[in-house]
Structure formats: structure tokens, C-alpha cells
Length: 156
Image (cartoon, rainbow, N blue to C red):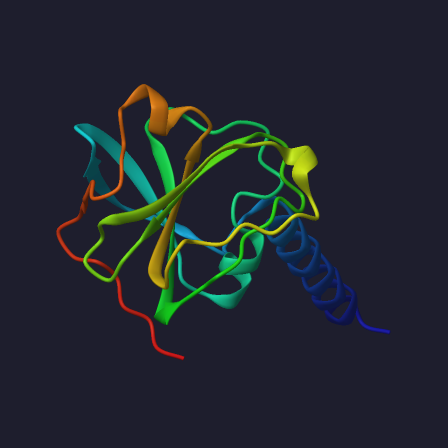
């Protein structure tokens, strides 16, 4: 076989290994794209808008920064259930209406609560997850707005 064949084969293998390594070390299911004010605190917001991101959520992370939140965006209002599958740290869940106002809060959910499923008290369009204790520490209550320049919209 020619030398060019082996060089080409080596290039294909190198690209394949690089792609596999990149896939295994990245988390493309959600993206950090915004900052929001929530109860007087500036949060870095990572959006979960794809089916992969909605399923993965914060699963597998061994810590959550105090100024961080993941915002789950749904195409329609609904009673979306959340569980702690693959979660390593406890969280607070804020259930938000279509205007971004808190309608329900579930606090200090332990990773060990899986397979329990948690639901809002009424249909919601958005769900925000933060580090456990955020609601209590910042006096977040029903009616508190999540202030974003633009809430993302997704369609089914």
C-alpha cells in the first residue's frame, strides 16, 4: 500500500480520537448565555432548551456556584416533574410562570431523594435550579421575579 494511504488512515484515526475526546469532556446540552437578577442577586444563567439538556440538567456536577442557575425552558405551560437522577449535590427548585415570577419553591432537595419526583403547585413555563439554600439565604418567595432581558422561547 502507498505511503499516502497510511498518512490518510492516520489522519482519520487522529480526527476520530479527537472527536471522541471532545464529546466525552464537553457538556453541549446547555449553554451559558445570560445574566439575570433574582432577589437582588446577579446570577449566571445557563439555559436548558434542548431535550438532551432538559434531561441532563445539573446531573453529574459535583458543585454549583452561589451565583449560578440553570433555567429550564419549556414550549408550553405544564406541570413538569423534576427528579434528582444523577445529582451529586442538593438544590433549590424555583417554578416560574410565563412572566418569570416564582409560583412555587421546593427547597434543599437532597440527591438521595431520587426516585421521588417534584412538581410545581400550578402549571409553569420555566424552572430555575440553584444551589441548595439560595431561596432561604436571599429571601426568595412566591412572586419574586427572575429578571432577564429576554426570556428564551422554544417550540415543540
